[in-house]
Image (cartoon, one colour):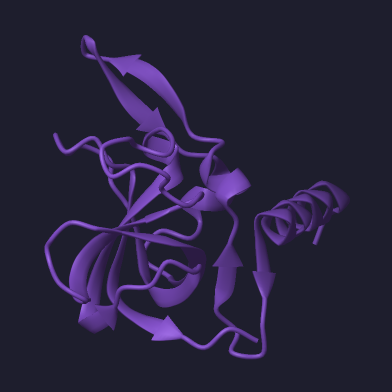
Length: 146
């Protein structure tokens, strides 16, 4: 392996380590700061998301996310909801921009709580959807915090 390739690989690994932290279960915990690094670029007359390399590398991989539940339906059990970086303080106010939300599609209903939750699932980048969301976690399950 040449020096340039080794240096590039080392830089990528260091950058990825800054984005995620690993627990005993080997699923990376993705930080909200890293998710916030997305930018918009103009393509064919409209803005599309441009994801940093470190986040793009996590597309379709199993990850963990920690955040606050924002229900989309009535009830204590939620199968589809938003996970937010900060606790919602108002039922009618969004607690951030699109980069501060992840759509959750849970395998089984998750009990709604006000405290932060940790979820694991398949992380998906949303490239071209009209819903305004940038990230999705599918087949999500609640994980016990350590």
